[in-house]
Image 1: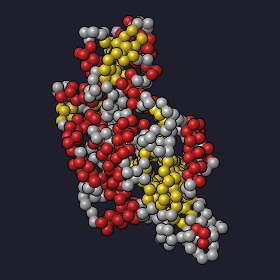
Image 2: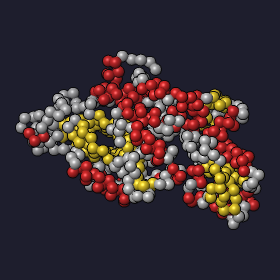
Image 3: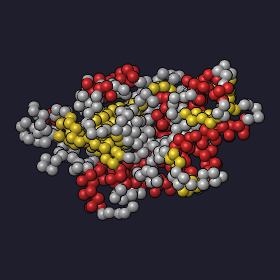
Length: 509
């Protein structure tokens, strides 16, 4: 990337951030220099009634959601090198800066997947994150990976509503909230995972459950009250759930839209002052009916959410001065922070497979085409292993494709396939009743189900007979599919590996 001078960079950042801190004609009060008991502000205008002392403190909140491991630059995504420079310069301009994550930080890229999220956790340590809310995809490698990252993290993992099935207690690798001091004020941060349990492979979360709905609301209310008793002046709710549509020319969100994932009573009754959201990959900065802002910034390092607040030392009243999403693409003129290269070097041995060229692709292939091919490869792979013993009639299941959702023309690396199909779902041979095979697979209304079979199967299907199919552990652990696992193919062979082997034969040239 092109380098620019430190002075020009500082000026550029000031413009990007619309001048962090109080307006130029307002004297900024130094940190910790105001004694609240020595002043009054009956009209809550930010100045002492008697001596005119400026009583406001400015805090900048930044939140990232659904990074999905977008660590290094790729053909489809910007890496975090310039974003890191941006955030470090912001922290220099205003030391009262709080950096948060609303979840789904790890799963998605070779850099993160091959290190089981550790490269992202190391990066967050370098940036001094205040907290990270767990998202559903943090559990894609099971609880052990979360525990290992929690031990490496220099910040707390938050999830007020994740509980162990055997004890009924909150899991030990996360906490419900954290109370931090920032420039003389106390900020409480509560984290929660939304109602997205079904988005995780069942075998990875068989020992835990999420409290959602009214139970979650009660947990957040009680935690907010506890934080207020301990001195919290401002409560941030970091929720891995959110509105499912990007903002389009509007600045507010209705209670009806909110209630799909958030209880408006939390805003109405003052339990929450600001909400950072995630999960749906939408992009918005919307204010609810009670004046509380809700922000989400897309996904895959598209943008970062920013909220600037002022808080009155004496009255404890808070005001949002700015709520916005800043596009990462606008930071491309900034210099690269060296932490990216440092961490890539740290993990270079485990990351070496990512750059391996598996073959070439002659035409642009969209996600549906790739998923249909994987369904066929499931069937052919299973037939080769189990075909002599079982009559395998179908391959496929719920097959999810991720960013960039297509395979471009040209050289294909393993990293590209891992971005498209990042999930480590193992192949399994399953038995299924004919009626369930028809309803759940052959005639599924879910557009993410892709199957490969003899076209005559549906016409000859016996609803009461038992059939054998090849799917993966995501589909087999989804209880409504009513599948019985007969045998596993073996750990370490996933959809992307089958596709890599197929491409290596020259079939896509």
